[in-house]
Length: 115
Image 1 (tube, rainbow, N blue to C red):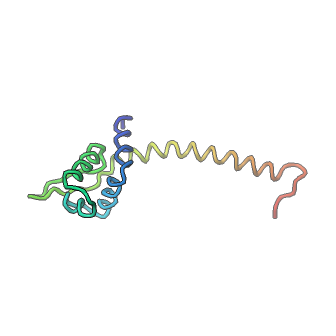
Image 2 (cartoon, rainbow, N blue to C red):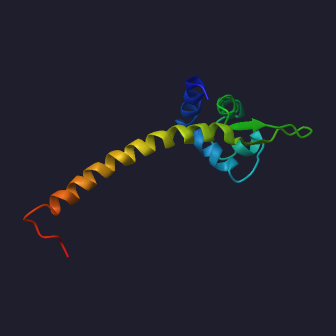
Image 3 (cartoon, rainbow, N blue to C red):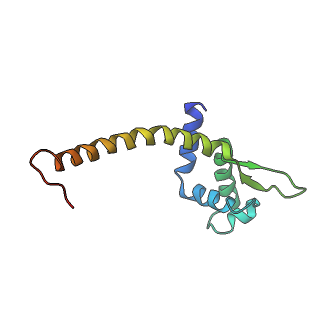
């Protein structure tokens, strides 16, 4: 995934309305009207949020006669997860070093270990 695509994913996830839409879609597909129902905003505003989610690769719109159901698309979230995982390993390695140093200081020469 390109950095531009990854930026689009994180930008889409930065908005609480879009995160709420994704949470709703985690329970199953829904129409635009169903997704708009819990929000105090117009259907065009919800449609703009859906367009951002779709461009980020987080949702896909289907076609079922008159209905256009939306559903989660995993690709965008997997790319974000992969990026986060790369840095998580580095962060955890940084946390291990102070823990190890602290243990060495506690159990160093002339110090009794806690029982």
